[in-house]
Length: 211
Image (tube, rainbow, N blue to C red; front, side):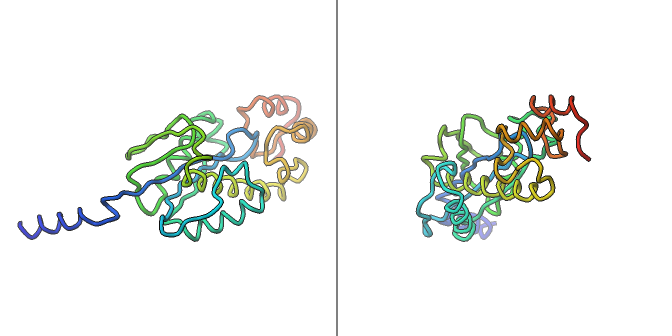
């Protein structure tokens, strides 16, 4: 019995356990008319700092790509997760976003003691969490998560563009631009369009969806 108590005390004094790990979480793809919403969770390594972390929307595509690789290489751990188009249509975009965030946190190899989430809403988690408005511009771990989520989703859109080139997904990334809306009117909705979003629903009424 004494040996067990001693072991427990030794484990509790480990530096990483006492300090705790903080994960940053952000999403990409709430506004587009097509594709999944993507969330990422990142636990940075204080001993391997990454220069230039910022809100992904403020960075050039090339800079995001380079930081994506650096984050994957230097972070203690990171996780990228999605909520599908079907889940978005069934749950609504807010609940699907929170679901993707929860999946990203649960996918981390190391369990954080605290999670910092960009915005003003929190997913259901079993650890301490805090929502931070504009956290992607002020908290490095959230900035890193925003970059991973954005690059992952942009790559997804580029792949979708090869399957449905008539919509221009590689350029507008699924957002409701004039070009995208015109394509919806001309071709109807593809399987990756969000049927619960009004422009898609209206286009679907006018033309049968593509197989």
